[in-house]
Image 1 (tube, rainbow, N blue to C red):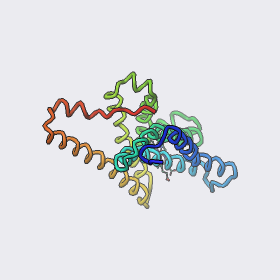
Image 2: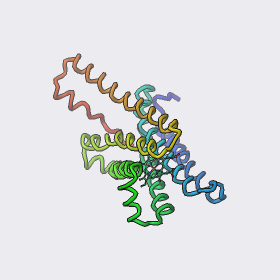
Image 3: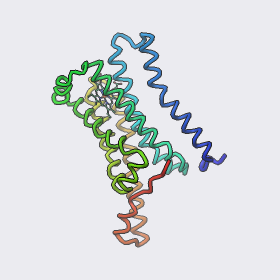
Image 4: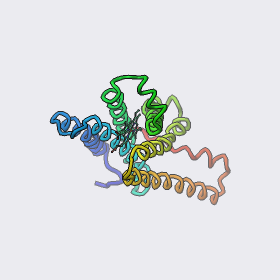
Length: 225
Ligand code: HEM
């Protein structure tokens, strides 16, 4: 099999396996909860576990495009939507754990938390910004918005990534090694995007393309699933 160009059935198989793999973190948390194996503070363990996986899936989905470009495996793009939706899924679990098990659906207490605790403010902002991305991740929404508008909207995944790192950074009290590591990964991914865009612009200028066309070309075609 050519890893650059697997057949339709192989891609479907990869996507099915990936779908199941992405469920492992929630299954493990559920199992540990059921077995009473989440330690002295199960709510904190679930909040932290789901928060960690939200951030990981965000970064993994952001890594898809650079990996595709470096490897030439174009089919990787077909996993990006699923990975992004998993980031949203874990964000919903994370938020629901906070709202339900931590705040007992006390909306005014949550509102106070959002206003008074900066790490909650930025986490909430990241979550709210994720909602339109999840809502417009389907083919009909892409068609309805049009490629350019869809892409501009989905660029907010970068500020979401930054807000998520700030959220994590501000909540840790002493050891910042983990948020620092995730922050570095995000910087590499963002740096790659900027470098690649700059290269492309230079290449087009060198080829003597008119400015208007260079701007228009920035819209990368959206790959249907
Ligand atoms: C995209 C959105 C979000 C991401 C990526 C995210 C990520 C994280 C991460 C990585 C952690 C730390 C896990 C650890 O310590 O190992 C965390 C903890 C936490 N997050 Fe979020 N979060 C998000 C949104 C939210 C929202 C909307 C809320 C509530 C309104 C929230 C409330 C919390 C709380 C209460 C903790 C645990 C603090 C503690 O007890 O140590 N997060 N989150």
